[in-house]
Picture 1 (spheres, rainbow, N blue to C red):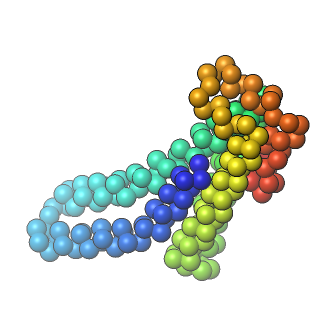
Picture 2: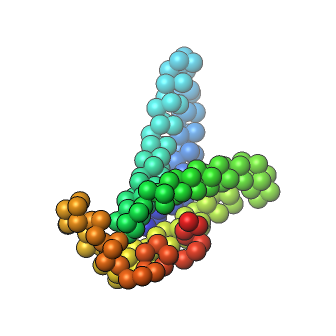
Amino acid sequence: YALIELSITATVLLSPGALKFVDNFYVWLWRSYHPTAGVLIFWQALLSTIILLVPTILMGSTLPLLARFVASVEKESGSLVGRLYALNTLGAAIGTVLAAFVLIRKVGVMCTLYTAAILNVIVASGGYLLHRIAWRNGVGQQQSEAPAQRAEVGARMPEGQGLKAAPAGLWLL
């Protein structure tokens, strides 16, 4: 999880350069070939898809990983996973509104981008810390166990060492 968050951070930091490259490509394409509007739109759609594909896949994989972690730590994980998805949706909405209507206006695009990168590093650090806590308590060993045995992991953990041991800033459950 932490590696995926750091990879997201890398894509955030690389995005201005990628967008500059694409912008230069559009100018070159126009000057060299004078494409029709349809051809230009094709290239814009293709390059936009390529630029957004990697971070979108990475961001889309984080919540299922967290849900899997919750399920491996807690015996009754259904409501926790549901709250996790709800908090993720709420956080995404708040983050979108703050970025679009507050941060970009107040501090600019690049500062907003760097703020997002810093927040991702903090989230990655929290994910790594949570991984270390879980590993110390024996949760990391379930990777090679059969699915039926994974449910026992939460039962083996000492009282208070499941998600409740995670820093409150990471889990508002």
